[in-house]
Length: 225
View 1 (cartoon, one colour):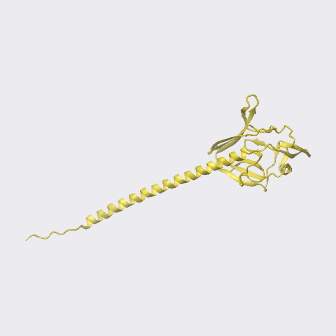
View 2 (cartoon, one colour):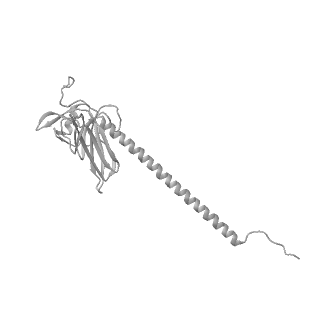
View 3 (cartoon, rainbow, N blue to C red):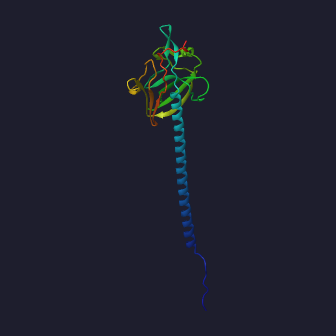
Protein backbone atom coordinates (compact mmCIF):
# COMPACT_ATOMS: atom_id res chain seq x y z
CA UNK A 1 0.00 0.00 0.00
CA UNK A 2 1.43 3.39 -1.06
CA UNK A 3 1.85 6.06 1.62
CA UNK A 4 -0.04 9.30 1.21
CA UNK A 5 2.08 12.40 0.27
CA UNK A 6 1.50 15.57 2.35
CA UNK A 7 1.51 18.98 0.65
CA UNK A 8 2.70 22.18 2.50
CA UNK A 9 5.73 24.08 3.82
CA UNK A 10 8.16 23.07 6.42
CA UNK A 11 9.01 25.44 9.27
CA UNK A 12 12.42 26.19 7.74
CA UNK A 13 10.87 27.10 4.39
CA UNK A 14 8.37 29.41 6.13
CA UNK A 15 11.13 31.14 8.08
CA UNK A 16 13.16 31.65 4.91
CA UNK A 17 10.11 33.15 3.14
CA UNK A 18 9.41 35.53 6.03
CA UNK A 19 13.08 36.58 6.11
CA UNK A 20 13.08 37.31 2.37
CA UNK A 21 9.86 39.32 2.57
CA UNK A 22 11.25 41.30 5.52
CA UNK A 23 14.50 41.98 3.64
CA UNK A 24 12.60 43.17 0.55
CA UNK A 25 10.34 45.39 2.69
CA UNK A 26 13.35 46.86 4.51
CA UNK A 27 15.05 47.60 1.18
CA UNK A 28 11.94 49.28 -0.15
CA UNK A 29 11.54 51.38 3.01
CA UNK A 30 15.20 52.40 2.84
CA UNK A 31 14.84 53.39 -0.82
CA UNK A 32 11.67 55.36 -0.05
CA UNK A 33 13.36 57.11 2.88
CA UNK A 34 16.34 58.02 0.70
CA UNK A 35 14.01 59.33 -1.99
CA UNK A 36 12.07 61.43 0.52
CA UNK A 37 15.28 62.89 1.97
CA UNK A 38 16.51 63.73 -1.53
CA UNK A 39 13.18 65.36 -2.36
CA UNK A 40 13.32 67.36 0.87
CA UNK A 41 16.84 68.56 0.08
CA UNK A 42 15.81 69.53 -3.45
CA UNK A 43 12.77 71.44 -2.19
CA UNK A 44 14.89 73.18 0.45
CA UNK A 45 17.44 74.15 -2.19
CA UNK A 46 14.66 75.48 -4.45
CA UNK A 47 13.24 77.55 -1.59
CA UNK A 48 16.70 78.92 -0.73
CA UNK A 49 17.27 79.77 -4.39
CA UNK A 50 13.90 81.54 -4.59
CA UNK A 51 14.68 83.45 -1.38
CA UNK A 52 18.12 84.41 -2.70
CA UNK A 53 16.62 85.57 -5.99
CA UNK A 54 14.00 87.58 -4.12
CA UNK A 55 16.64 89.13 -1.86
CA UNK A 56 18.85 89.87 -4.86
CA UNK A 57 15.97 91.69 -6.56
CA UNK A 58 15.11 93.68 -3.41
CA UNK A 59 18.72 94.85 -3.07
CA UNK A 60 18.78 95.82 -6.74
CA UNK A 61 15.49 97.71 -6.38
CA UNK A 62 16.66 99.56 -3.28
CA UNK A 63 20.09 100.55 -4.58
CA UNK A 64 18.71 101.27 -8.04
CA UNK A 65 16.13 103.61 -6.50
CA UNK A 66 18.79 105.89 -4.98
CA UNK A 67 17.90 109.60 -4.99
CA UNK A 68 20.42 112.47 -5.38
CA UNK A 69 19.35 114.26 -2.19
CA UNK A 70 21.00 117.16 -0.41
CA UNK A 71 20.48 117.00 3.35
CA UNK A 72 21.15 119.23 6.35
CA UNK A 73 24.28 118.45 8.35
CA UNK A 74 26.38 120.27 10.92
CA UNK A 75 30.06 121.12 10.61
CA UNK A 76 31.70 122.69 13.67
CA UNK A 77 28.31 123.87 14.85
CA UNK A 78 27.33 125.38 11.51
CA UNK A 79 24.47 124.03 9.38
CA UNK A 80 25.67 122.94 5.94
CA UNK A 81 24.16 121.18 2.96
CA UNK A 82 25.69 117.81 2.12
CA UNK A 83 24.93 115.06 -0.41
CA UNK A 84 23.29 112.16 1.41
CA UNK A 85 25.40 109.37 0.02
CA UNK A 86 28.49 107.96 1.67
CA UNK A 87 30.06 104.53 1.36
CA UNK A 88 33.05 102.38 2.18
CA UNK A 89 33.91 98.68 2.00
CA UNK A 90 31.93 97.95 5.17
CA UNK A 91 28.74 99.91 4.58
CA UNK A 92 26.97 102.78 2.86
CA UNK A 93 24.26 105.33 3.49
CA UNK A 94 21.82 106.67 0.91
CA UNK A 95 18.29 107.94 0.28
CA UNK A 96 16.16 105.66 -1.87
CA UNK A 97 12.61 105.42 -3.13
CA UNK A 98 12.40 101.68 -2.29
CA UNK A 99 11.76 100.17 1.13
CA UNK A 100 12.64 96.59 2.09
CA UNK A 101 9.50 96.37 4.20
CA UNK A 102 6.97 98.28 2.08
CA UNK A 103 8.37 98.13 -1.45
CA UNK A 104 8.05 101.13 -3.76
CA UNK A 105 5.31 102.77 -1.68
CA UNK A 106 5.12 105.75 0.62
CA UNK A 107 7.90 108.17 1.53
CA UNK A 108 11.54 107.79 0.51
CA UNK A 109 13.82 106.15 3.05
CA UNK A 110 17.25 106.84 4.46
CA UNK A 111 18.94 103.44 4.25
CA UNK A 112 22.19 102.28 5.80
CA UNK A 113 23.83 99.01 4.72
CA UNK A 114 26.29 97.57 7.24
CA UNK A 115 28.58 94.53 7.24
CA UNK A 116 28.71 93.40 10.88
CA UNK A 117 30.68 90.57 12.57
CA UNK A 118 28.85 87.60 14.10
CA UNK A 119 31.57 86.73 16.60
CA UNK A 120 32.37 83.31 15.10
CA UNK A 121 34.48 84.43 12.16
CA UNK A 122 31.48 85.08 9.91
CA UNK A 123 29.60 88.27 9.21
CA UNK A 124 26.15 89.48 8.25
CA UNK A 125 24.75 92.11 5.90
CA UNK A 126 22.16 94.33 7.60
CA UNK A 127 19.97 97.10 6.18
CA UNK A 128 18.56 99.79 8.49
CA UNK A 129 16.03 102.27 7.19
CA UNK A 130 14.08 105.27 8.48
CA UNK A 131 11.56 107.57 6.83
CA UNK A 132 12.89 110.56 4.93
CA UNK A 133 10.10 113.16 5.03
CA UNK A 134 12.51 116.12 4.70
CA UNK A 135 16.25 116.95 4.67
CA UNK A 136 16.01 118.10 8.31
CA UNK A 137 15.60 114.49 9.44
CA UNK A 138 19.24 113.80 8.58
CA UNK A 139 20.46 115.92 11.51
CA UNK A 140 19.91 112.96 13.83
CA UNK A 141 22.72 110.95 12.26
CA UNK A 142 24.69 113.40 10.10
CA UNK A 143 27.60 114.88 12.08
CA UNK A 144 29.57 116.48 9.25
CA UNK A 145 29.69 116.44 5.44
CA UNK A 146 31.92 113.35 5.44
CA UNK A 147 30.82 111.67 8.67
CA UNK A 148 27.60 109.73 9.22
CA UNK A 149 26.43 108.52 12.63
CA UNK A 150 24.55 105.23 13.13
CA UNK A 151 20.79 105.53 12.78
CA UNK A 152 20.05 104.28 16.27
CA UNK A 153 16.98 102.47 17.67
CA UNK A 154 14.48 104.32 15.44
CA UNK A 155 15.69 102.41 12.38
CA UNK A 156 13.96 99.28 11.13
CA UNK A 157 16.58 96.58 10.66
CA UNK A 158 16.56 93.66 8.28
CA UNK A 159 19.24 90.97 8.09
CA UNK A 160 19.81 90.42 4.38
CA UNK A 161 22.52 87.75 4.63
CA UNK A 162 23.03 86.11 8.06
CA UNK A 163 26.27 84.13 7.63
CA UNK A 164 28.96 85.38 5.26
CA UNK A 165 32.57 84.24 5.19
CA UNK A 166 33.56 87.44 3.38
CA UNK A 167 31.86 90.54 2.00
CA UNK A 168 32.71 94.00 0.74
CA UNK A 169 31.11 96.95 -1.06
CA UNK A 170 32.79 98.89 -3.85
CA UNK A 171 31.87 101.91 -5.96
CA UNK A 172 32.50 102.64 -9.63
CA UNK A 173 33.21 106.13 -10.87
CA UNK A 174 31.72 107.71 -13.98
CA UNK A 175 34.18 108.28 -16.79
CA UNK A 176 33.26 111.58 -18.52
CA UNK A 177 35.44 110.72 -21.53
CA UNK A 178 33.59 107.52 -22.41
CA UNK A 179 30.37 108.34 -20.48
CA UNK A 180 30.65 104.81 -19.07
CA UNK A 181 31.95 103.22 -15.91
CA UNK A 182 35.56 103.75 -14.90
CA UNK A 183 37.62 102.45 -11.97
CA UNK A 184 36.24 100.80 -8.84
CA UNK A 185 36.93 102.30 -5.39
CA UNK A 186 36.56 100.87 -1.84
CA UNK A 187 35.27 104.22 -0.55
CA UNK A 188 33.01 106.95 -1.94
CA UNK A 189 32.95 110.49 -0.52
CA UNK A 190 32.70 112.43 -3.78
CA UNK A 191 29.96 115.08 -4.16
CA UNK A 192 27.97 113.05 -6.69
CA UNK A 193 26.64 109.56 -7.13
CA UNK A 194 28.81 106.66 -8.32
CA UNK A 195 28.21 105.08 -11.70
CA UNK A 196 27.51 101.69 -10.10
CA UNK A 197 27.63 99.88 -6.74
CA UNK A 198 28.80 96.31 -6.23
CA UNK A 199 28.23 94.08 -3.18
CA UNK A 200 30.42 90.96 -3.12
CA UNK A 201 29.35 88.20 -0.73
CA UNK A 202 30.67 84.72 -0.08
CA UNK A 203 28.55 82.66 -0.22
CA UNK A 204 26.03 84.50 -2.36
CA UNK A 205 28.05 85.81 -5.27
CA UNK A 206 28.19 89.39 -6.48
CA UNK A 207 25.43 91.97 -7.01
CA UNK A 208 26.27 94.90 -9.30
CA UNK A 209 23.72 97.70 -9.63
CA UNK A 210 24.16 100.57 -12.12
CA UNK A 211 22.67 103.89 -11.00
CA UNK A 212 20.52 105.38 -13.74
CA UNK A 213 20.47 108.87 -12.25
CA UNK A 214 21.49 111.85 -14.36
CA UNK A 215 20.80 114.62 -11.84
CA UNK A 216 24.05 116.07 -10.46
CA UNK A 217 24.34 117.20 -6.84
CA UNK A 218 26.36 120.22 -7.87
CA UNK A 219 23.92 121.52 -10.47
CA UNK A 220 21.38 124.15 -9.45
CA UNK A 221 17.76 123.39 -10.28
CA UNK A 222 14.82 125.75 -10.09
CA UNK A 223 12.96 123.48 -7.67
CA UNK A 224 15.86 123.36 -5.20
CA UNK A 225 15.33 125.87 -2.40
